[in-house]
Amino acid sequence: MSSPAMLLTVLGSGSCELRRERSSPAYLLEAQGFGLLLDLGQGALRRLLDSGRDPAALGGLLLSHHHPDHLGDLIPLLFALNYDPRLRQRASLSLLAHAGLEPLLAGLEGLFGSWLTPPPERLAPTWLQPGQELALGPWRLRAAAAEHTPFSLAYRLEREGASLVYLGDSQASPQLAEFCLGADLLIAHCAGSDQAPKPGHLSPRQAGRLAAQARAGALLLSHFYVDVDPAQAVAAAGALFAGPVWAAEDLMSLAIANGHCQILVPHG
Ligand SMILES: [Zn+2]
Ligand SMILES: [Zn+2]
Image (cartoon, rainbow, N blue to C red):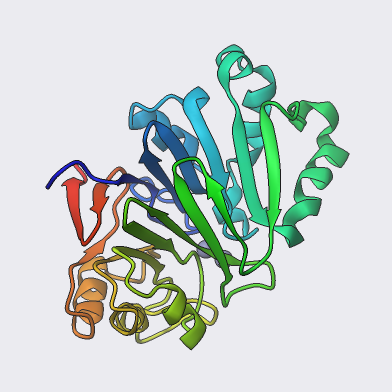
């Protein structure tokens, strides 16, 4: 494969369950030296350090919604932006989330005061609406309403003809199938099993059906609970989707290029 347009590293492939092997949902997307976090569940910063990355070099953080397992490490990140000397010197981070989450930072400031209020040159928030499109680092970013909570967003990131959709927690819908159309990689959270689906989430079969409807290049299943068997989930999704289907594992890396996606570092 020629040099990929972007690199994805799974920092958390789990859920709210406290598990040694699966941290809560978080991913690192990298291109042209720009590191973008997709969600920041508890344990994400530790996994980021385990992956050898420098937190001071991060460029941005995209939040899909405000369930605590998706942003549990926001408090330690904000605290470090204020008091970790390396982050104080070098960090400059964009925070992007649904406009309905604007009270989040104000709420933390209300409780913690200046401890969790980094200066604007170190953390610059942008509040998004569904349908919004903007440039973010080396990517074009588009946001769409996810079918999960009123303030949930799915994100599509494109660069050099390659595209990734981070669906976050969501059910399927015709609008979301359209939003995912032709994505080289679709990250879908199959929180419930096909036998016991969870409302507001995809089951593995539903994720496979969505990937097929969207004619995605490849499907990465993630957000695993203990009661969802990853191998069975891959088989169930693969029965409906002809492209590659993978079960995410913490610290797995994938290269994403136009029309091609491959695993670089399986979990060791
Ligand atoms: Zn959620
Ligand atoms: Zn979740």
